[in-house]
Amino acid sequence: MRKVLGVLLALTCAVLVLDLARPSWTEPVRAASASVFTPVQQAIRGWDRDELDRVAAERDRLAVEVERLRGRQDAALAAGDLDLPGTAGLRPVGARVVAATPQTSPAGARVVTIDAGSRQGVRADRTVLNADGLVGRVLRVDPSSAEVVLLGDRSVVVGVRVGREGALGSLSATAPSEVPRRGADELTLTAIGDSPMSVGDVVRTLGSPGDVPYSAGIEVGTVTSVDPDSGQLAGTAVVRPAVDADRLDTVVVLTGGQRP
Amino acid sequence: MTRALGLTVRGALLLLGALAMSVAPRSLPGPPDLVLVAVAGTALLRGPWAGAGMGLAGGWLLDVVPPGAEPMGASALTYAAVGALLGLSRRYVAASPVVLPLAPLAAVALASLGVVMVRGVATAAGITEAGLVDLWWTWAATVLVAVLLLPPLTGLERWLAVRRWT
Image 1: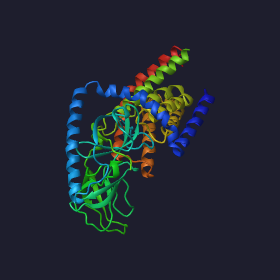
Image 2: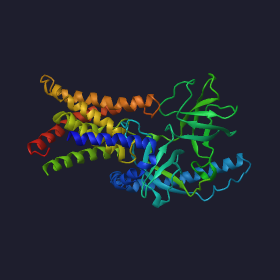
Image 3: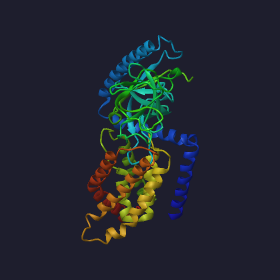
C-alpha cells in the first residue's frame, strides 16, 4: 500500500512538471476525460431545464447577433467604412455552461466547460459571448464540449476601443503596482497613447484579423473609475465587465473565423 | 476482491463529489468542498496512508473532471497532503472524548481552511485569482456540509471495515 502510494505520488509530481513544461503532452488525458465526463455533466445539468435552456440559448443567440452586427456597424463607421478582410460569415453557435473549475483548485484558471464542441463547429481561440457582452475565448475543444477561458483570467488580455472616440487600449485582470488594488471582478484598462478616458465610457473589443480570437465591436464593460497619475507608464482605468461570470448560463460561440 | 469493493465504493463517492463540485451553479458564492469531506470520512478512521491515497484520488478527479484544473496534478498533491494530515489527526480526534462529536468537525474545518489557503496564497502570488469572499463561503459551506455528511460517511467506513472491504 505504502509503496504503491509512493509510486503514485512520484508519478503525480512527474505529471505536474510535465504539464507545466509541455501542456500539449497532457492534452490527451484532458480530451479523454472530457469525452467521459462531459456527457454526465450535461445530463446532470439538463435534468430539469432542457426546454428553458433551449429557449434561453436561442434568445441569447439572436441578441448576440444583433449586438455583434450593431458593434460591427459602429466599428465600420468609426473606421471610415473600412472593410476588414475575413470578418464576414461568422456563425453563432449556442451552448450551455455545464461545469466550472471548483473554487478549491490550488491554481485553477477561470475556465468553464460548454456543451458544444468540434462537432458543432467550435474551434479553439473563437470568441465566446452572451447577450450582455464578451465572455471569453475557446481554450480547448473536444468533439462534444469545449473549455472557455473567461475574461478576468490572468492569461486573458483583450485589445479594446474605449468611448465614442474609439481610443485604443488593452484590458486585463492584472494591474500595475502603482494603481489602487482592484476588486475581485474588476479589470484594468491600459490606454495606448494619450486619449482621455472617462467614467461611463463603454469598452468594446478591438477585434482581430479573421475574428480570431476576438471579433470586433463586442461590449466588454464600462469604465467605473480612472486611476490618478501615480507614475504608471500609461493611463489606466477600472472597468466593470458587462458579463457577470458567476451567473453564466447560455453562451454563444462565434465560429467560422479564419486564423490570420 | 473484497478490497476492490471498498475501493469502488470510495471511488464512487469521490466521483460524485467531484462531479457535483464541477456542475455547482457559479451563482453560489462558494460551493462546498465535497471531495474533502469524502476524504475526511476515510482519513479520520483509517489513518494517514489511507487518507493520502483517498486525497490523491480525489485531487486527481478534480484535476481531470472538465474543465479540470491547471497544472494537472496540483490538486492531487494538495488533497493527498491534506488527507495525510487528516489521517494523522485521527489519534487526537479519538483521544478527545469530551468534545468527541466536534473533534472530527474541527479537523475538517482546519483541513478545509488549509485547502482554501493554498488557493488564497496562489492568488496572492499572482498564479491564479479567487475572491476572498468566495473562498470564505467555500470554507463555511464545507464545514456545514461536513456536519451533515461526516456521520454517514464515517458510518459507511465502519460498515466497510466490518465486512472487511478495506
